[in-house]
Amino acid sequence: MAVPYFYSLRNLWTRRLTTALTAAGMALVVFVFAAMQMFASGLQETLVDTGSFDNVVVIRKAAVTEVQSGVERGQAALVEVQPEVAAGPGGRPLVAKELVVLITLPKRGTSKAANVQVRGVAPASLELRPQVHLVAGRMPRPGTAEIAAGQNIARRFQGAGLGETLRFALRDWAVVGVFDAGATGFDSEIWGDGDQMMQAFHRPVYSSVLLRLRDSGAFPALKARLEADPRLTVEAKRESRFYADQSEAMATFLRVFGAVLSVIFSVGAVLGAMITMYAAVANRTGEIGTLRTLGFSRASILAAFLLEAGLLGLLGGVAGLALASLLQLVTISTLNWQTFSELAFRFALTAPIAASSLGFSLGMGLAGGLLPAFRAASMNIVESLRAT
Image (cartoon, rainbow, N blue to C red; front, side):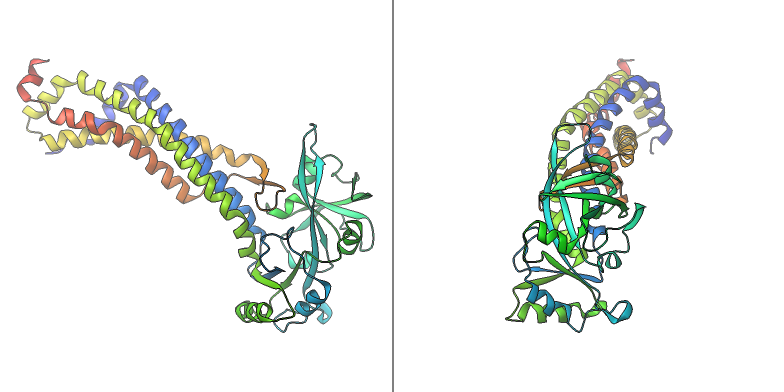
């Protein structure tokens, strides 16, 4: 005969102050666990969404980022005429030969500075990235010292707002536009004319060549031809894969670090749950004896106390997850370990993160209630009734 479920719920309500305090400790652990997972997920989503599956990034062989890469003009011209390249309006190839460099800018309201990624773009750059659209002003005109800033850069850095002026590479650059890139990595970049950027930074080579595939399935053939051509020292990656690779190391570190930190903190939460459940067993010794007298088995007593501990853990998990979900309203910035530039993004709460957080809290509750539950189930009926 099983103990009714409401028995466990009633006991949690009867000891609501102790229940609330124990659940609060678990909630803080779950908050840390979920927050670190959301941090890693938000970073990964921002970079993965930056790339398009139908676009291909061509960079120097063995280069990890565009900043490290160099593609000579002659090599870029060979990439441009590959048969897999899609044609744009007027039959011109949908190819953008771009330069990417880092500059240091001071942040608004502080004396601190951070690295910002500057991208020298081509006429096709905007067409190849449909997620980028202007929210104010206009795009820079070719052949001029004009730039457009991603909205995260315009908001966070001095001189990067619409109508302001930035000075870098020994030139003054007028900010004529602010663009929104749909919460992707481009929101943390500054764009200007590629030829002007190459002159200003004295760069004779491009950083990368971006192209649109005529047919998405043609990527393997294009990759094999480019990487086997003895005239070229390049490698090709789908744009989505290229940006996903940049987030992998940091995201993995954050998840592992968050898990280790949560396990350390969970020791205290489990001990708190164990103390709470031992106190519950001690206060209900006579009640346990009565249940045994009425015919409830040791297994049903064990299950009732484990259910109570599990509910306590879930209560803390729901509270911690609800608190962590508020982080989605916050935009933060961090250093991209691959490019060493500023990257702004939001925490991302996903179904797997929610499930793992609740599972983690349930595990804490059960771990804390296991020994007290065995203690309750192993009580002698006569001794329990004498305690009443």
